[in-house]
Image (cartoon, rainbow, N blue to C red):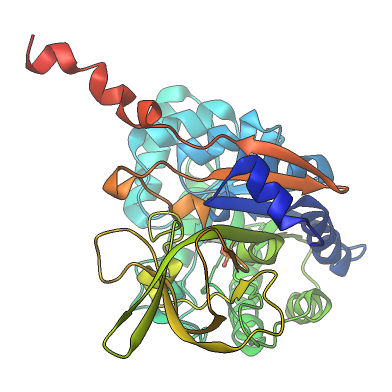
Length: 407
Ligand SMILES: *Cc1c(COP(=O)(O)O)cnc(C)c1O
């Protein structure tokens, strides 16, 4: 992104998220293109960045949406994603969410347990519809990523074992109100090695073949998300290699390949800008205190995740090690540890890189801090896509209750 960051900060203030929409386009096209002439649908994982403008941009490119709550389904619909490109996943769907998803007639509901299948069947019966479903299988492969974002092992809460999946498909096939059309797995996030994906694909493709042999015709082969991105110096998987690995495992199957990238689509398209408030030294430890905090960007605190942090307009100045910390009253409130930074002054700006995914969406109002504004850059122009949250925004739902408690 070649941006005039100083101008953007003057215009929008900090803390601030900025997303490069041209970068998102390129990412989408590269992945979609990697599947070539093969039937495929890229269903963007809305949880990674659910700003309506982001979803709308992807919808315009032809993307679908992978949603994990009815709120996300409704965001996707509002942003113009076609209903036949929306899928609804998640381990714990409420009855009301299932009902609404069926009423909205989305592409499919992704089931994560036998008990959930029975709920979906019951609700579909009440509505007198046939629920299109897929089943999330847990192929029990080690994705070789951070344990908090690993999901494809039996010890993780996600999906069902291959045996239960098969039983569920047989049940669903017989049910008047279930139509099993898809199979799904998602083994983890920030995957940088291809072999676990290839392995999982192979296992799941075998299950599809054995289902085919008993007359169950799977039309959607959903490989989940998880493609890793560069935060530091990782070597990531090239979309072309990713597609090739998947295709090599599903030879002979007539399926549409569904993929659910979130991080891949958004992480590197976004930066987080924060202004320096103060510097201080406690004993030997140097701290740079900034106006952005864990409530704005939680990943460092939550996972110990690394984000590259850079001072702008300080090229060539002598650097030393510092922790970059926010104003929130938690020792865990940091954006970076042991960052090499030059001497920082009040109002200097730091760029936190690769912050477009799981940044804003994980933000909160902790310490009664308003959420950041979000800005899109497209063809060199900037567009405000979410206003900075005000104090009034934060207390609105409490104020409306004032008379309940004390009049
Ligand atoms: C979180 C999630 C994704 C997206 O994961 P990324 O690592 O951001 O690509 C895709 N599918 C499911 C089911 C998920 O839970």
